[in-house]
Image (tube, rainbow, N blue to C red; front, side, top):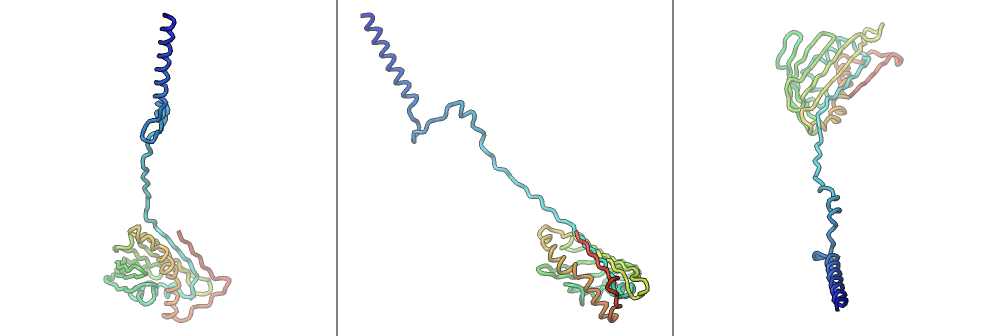
Length: 224
């Protein structure tokens, strides 16, 4: 009797253990998905956070310089460049040029430059040193944060007095990032054509240029 009671108790205990094991292994949740073991849940990394990217944009100052031997004298080239009031007739995209103040060695002029899609009005302070230098600096304006041009004139080819060496340089920086996108247009349509425009004006004012032997001609351009 005692042996049969022990076997019955053992069988009952075994049944309960099998039921408990079945309950533990049973699928859970509405779709029967198992929950991962506790150890695996701990190994899961934290949720990814969105990453913000900041693009740093700045305006950049541009510079251009050009040196050429011209078939006109220093005085002739100086006179063309110093005659600011005539700029509207031949300088690329210059729509207006008026001298508003004048004293020895100095001019103040109001200029208007239009190149698609911008029209800019600004005041230029101009320093004159006959016949060596014409320097112009933009003193106000909405388009340029900085604009400065320099013309320097020096003797040309020895033995050819009606020749000169012309050094032209310009540096500029647009005031806004939006306008900085116009840098290429400004370079191609205004800056790169500047020296040639003044050479053509010298031809109108003083006649044909002095013929320069091909082997003595010089033309150098730099831009950054």
